[in-house]
Image 1 (cartoon, rainbow, N blue to C red):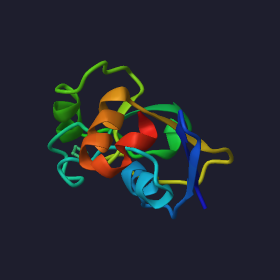
Image 2 (image 1 turned 90 degrees about the vertical axis):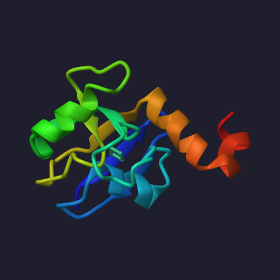
Image 3 (image 1 turned 45 degrees about the vertical axis):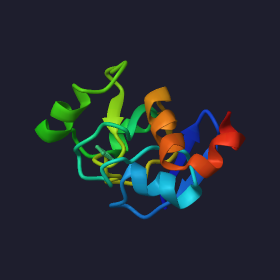
Length: 117
Ligand code: FES
């Protein structure tokens, strides 16, 4: 089963193929924002794929359009709600949750604010 590690905190999820990175984040409690509920409309689920990007679905035009609205977009940028795990790589998929996404998560989870500073 594919394993996804979320940096900088190191949360790890084991999820079946077909899952999105956002679903993996939710499974392990990683602080990835999802203000639009995973509907490709907000960019708060913006992550950088550090390893294992070949195991992910290709980026489609709708995702690219929303990523245009995100901060600090890099070639490794993906929307967690749109990047689907399509195969099981031999090593982990490693993803870094962007500052923008972490802040969105804290805004969505005010009860956790004291834990993340
Ligand atoms: Fe809104 Fe991914 S959760 S674009």
